[in-house]
View (cartoon, rainbow, N blue to C red):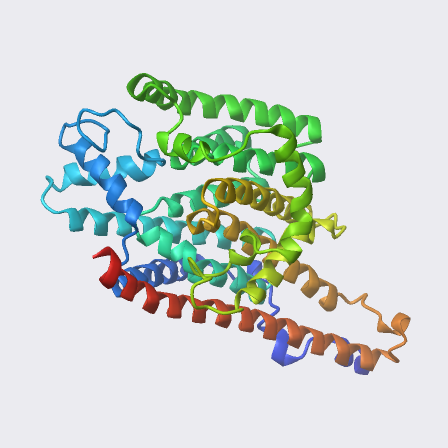
Length: 447
């Protein structure tokens, strides 16, 4: 019996990697994760000095507001030339605080705040991993991919609102996974935060709601689908109370509650419901054979220019995360919700970006990338738990006695370890190369 236990136990090689972090996490772990994510993002900013072209457009509006000329791009013309309220109002406040002394100082302060937001997001991720009883390897995959993802980092330090979009999306996931008796109120706050970050967040919220109602994930304070619906209705009312003042004010000030940036892009789109339905039905097939946002999820911005066929690796990973919802699992229902949401959002992004631009707009992708990272982590966790289960019996598969079973499971765990390390190395390499490219771009084009 002792010999059998020895053969079926986890070897010393795997013990640390497959250790449940829930039993070993402490305040130092949270501090370390925060500092790592914050420092990596700031280092990326110092090296690349990257400032997105939209930053210069939006900051001009912010500066006009701060100097008393109104929330406009051109003084006297009330055009809502910005999309993100948060991405416009925070720089305006920073301009006031710094007495309009330096535009570069405002940008660096905005970068600094955004990196703090990314750090706080990583703490939420670690708490989710803790609550979900993730293994160390799975937690490393979750936080590591988030920390070094090219577009999440770049669009957070180059003047975009990405850090806040990611923060509120993860907060949404946090409330779905980590049980909280104030779920209704907090969901309303998070939804309002998303709407203030980007008005099309209502699409992301709706996609997540659809996934929740389909897969009905377990929650301590939610009994059934009807209870979910009631919760969403009251959360929506809270969100409305918080967001409608801005909605009506912009309607009064600009003559339209919809940003003119969205109105302009919408002029190039078709709103024929039949055409939209055909596109959505066809997309699951298109994402396999065509070039879509699926290919670009884990790639650098504008990866088509000089990156060769490396996007195939990212495409395979993203296809897994977009189709994971097909895997039956009661324990990982929340992962199926997020996976189905990934598919829906990619469908939305493809229709919007290709309809407006004719190409994939990279600044939309960090929001769906973080959800894909979540699904990937849950998928690896599920595979890990299966191989670590004492009930795993390879005799049923004709693989011999229990000793052979132990060998097979250990090798499978080694493969999972290799995958985690390989995908992290792959993502980090892309980010480092992208940083070099963006530094050159900043010097030659933007500056």
